Image (tube, rainbow, N blue to C red):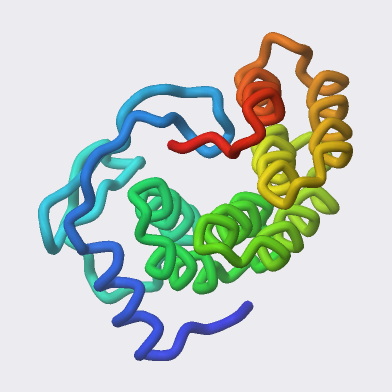
Amino acid sequence: MKRLNSIQIVIAAGLLLAPVQSFALGDDDGTSTRSKPVCKKGYVYSKIKKRCVRQGSEIIPDQMLIDQGWALAYQGKFNLAVDLFNLVVDQRNPQALNGLGYSYRKMGQLDRGIGYYQQALAIDPDYHLAREYLGEGYVKAGRIGLAKAQLSEIALRCGTECKEYRLLARAIATGDENDW
């Protein structure tokens, strides 16, 4: 297991404790539209206790890093999101890889972002959100044929009525990535 050094722990704790605006874009898997809990400075949301708790100096679980990384990414704080996604111990976690892809794509590093989406999909080919974001990357790159191939893959896996299908279809039709 990869161990975090003290500098990484301080950075991660600082990023986790920074005030974050709530958003209602849904979970990374695209299945929920509930708002993410936001805690005051010095506290993080515990899914176990279902409330904000004071953050100690213990190792931060991967899922907390991923959740906070997505919160930051959806707020446009891509560099901070990348820092958190990179601290995830399981570097083969599809959610973290998808988060890196999303963040790099939004920062204009399209090829790098596409590479992370492809890594996520190599691990979990049924990860609809990674396919949708990869398709948006292809739209941004003007590679509409590849975007349509991702749309077809999404249709095979979740149908034409699922959220990811509709979002990618809209991006292809407009020629532009969706703006969260």
